[in-house]
Length: 347
Image (cartoon, rainbow, N blue to C red):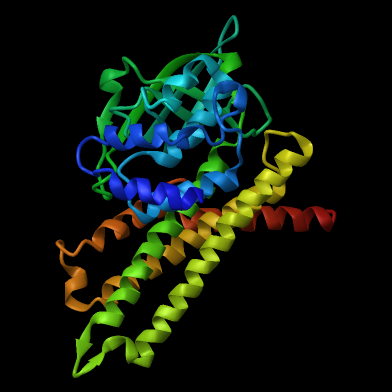
């Protein structure tokens, strides 16, 4: 029901402009507070619920940082609970760093220094930036995250090359003082990876639906081209890929929610981290295959700018390269398995 409601909303709201209209409509729908606790004015739901929204944002190629705002609101509710209301109401935009890296170093009297070079969507119009960080002052790898107020950063924000024309990207250079207490343990990075996997799923499903519709309508030599068995096999394989994408992202989200509901812990378990790596790795590669097949099966029209298949493809390519590529996540999984094997062997 949530997915159907959000899909209808995104279909009605104009996509032109700076995205403010879309942001306001989604805020009024309660989308941004899905994972924020009740005490902060949110709905207190889980990652599985947020997945439904992320999938629809990908399906509609929504020109607004939907998944970033949901994840940032979850973090903001713990670091700056007084500021959450303006995000949930749509009065301000929150976003997340999806590329680059940042490091925290401790300074005197409970202060810390945040330095890094980050890739951030909608940084020009966002008020709050959620940042996954590494801590030089602790051996604990975290995960750690903090919040940055982008107001007044000015020259530290510059436009970055854009692949996804609906999603303006920026480079943000940080040399920023924060309260040490504002750097908390938070699952921002793996949470975003799973939400990105869901958005990839929605974009791939959009491509598959368009392809099936075209194969049923396009006639050549007196027959619809969908009657060609070779083409049907390609579409069938893509359907299996999309179902696998749904399963991978939903399993990861369910692992997160199960761990939090049973232990009350805010930190991801090892099972969730592994599932998040699998979801992002698989969805990044599978979505690209589905989109490329869609363009190929549409023939000459699929390659034209006007037909528009390049829009979901661009969304898929951007999401696939942000928050770690498929190869990055597979490398991490392989390294973890090798460490575990060595440990089991007493090495």
